[in-house]
Image 1: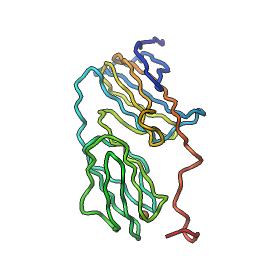
Image 2: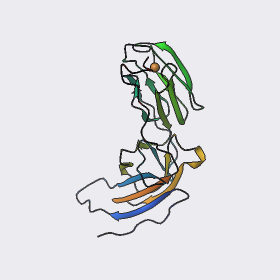
Image 3: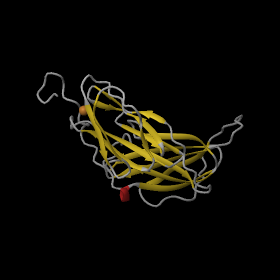
Image 4: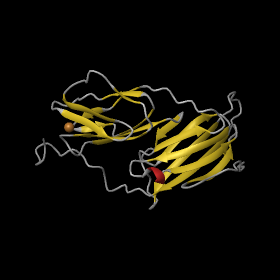
Length: 226
Ligand SMILES: [Cu+2]
C-alpha cells in the first residue's frame, strides 16, 4: 500500500519524488527515513555531494565536533571529500615518503601546514560551516574538499548519487545539497514533512560540471612526477 503523506515541498532544486508508509510493525521507536538523490543537468549521478538535514520545529543545536583524519597516500588526499560537523578537529598525516605542504585559503577556514612528513603535532579545528578546499603547494593535482556543516544529520552521496538517513523523528525538515562545484546561492534547498514510520525520496538536480574524472597523481616514472 502506498499513501502520499507529504504536503510541504520545495523552494528550489530539491523536489519530493515519493512518499510512502512502511509497515514497520514490531518496531518500538517510530521514526522516518529519507533518501536523497542528486543528479546533474544530464541526469548523471553526482557523487560526494554533501546533504544536510535540519529539524525545522526544534531549536538549533550545533552538533558537537569529532576527530577525523584526512590522509595523504600516494600523493593524493584520502578521502578526497568528507563531511564533518562544526568544531571537528582533523589531523592531516602524511603517509608518503616525500614532503607535502597542505594549505587552504577558504573563507570557512584558512590554514597552512608547511612542508612536512609524518604526523603533524596537532589537528586543525574547523569552527565555521562552509566548504573548505585543501590543496598541496608542491603537487598541484592534490585537492580535497571538507564540508563543515552545522546540521545534525549529514552525509555524502555515493557513486549512484544517493544518500539515505533513517531514525528521523516525525516533523518538518529542511534539506540542503552542497557541492564544491556549486556557488552558495546555487545550493539546492528543500523542505519536507515526515510522519513517523514514513519513507520519502527527494531528488535534486544541480548545475554542476562533473567532468570526465578527477585528476590523479601522475604514475611513477612519467614526466611531471615529483
Ligand atoms: Cu604534496
